Length: 119
Image (tube, rainbow, N blue to C red; front, side, top):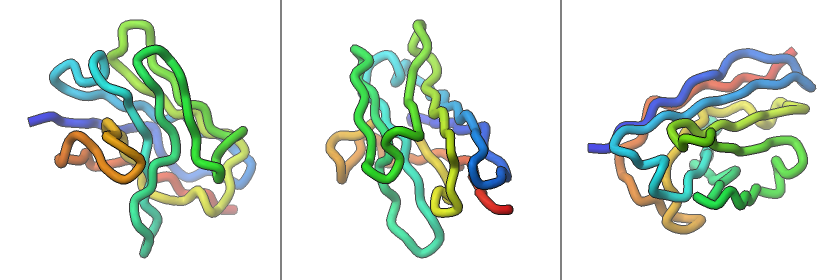
């Protein structure tokens, strides 16, 4: 069973920055397009950024220009650099491999990492 491990969240003031990391078992990160998702209280989980094996990226309009997804050269970790954070970015952030904007390849999600943006 694939396991995802997200880290790097925390409490940050509006305008601040955080860098999230995602590790996965089974060589997943070397095989699939990867995405970062978030779920705010009372809302559905949404895809906010994705990166292909070739390094092409795509972002949700709500984070475009503020977030940057990347993967290291060995494709063992995927990152999400989050700048100019807003209170509405508060959510639990997860990684997975998107099959489409509304579906993922792997049903098992990690614990996620909590991001709280508040003064």
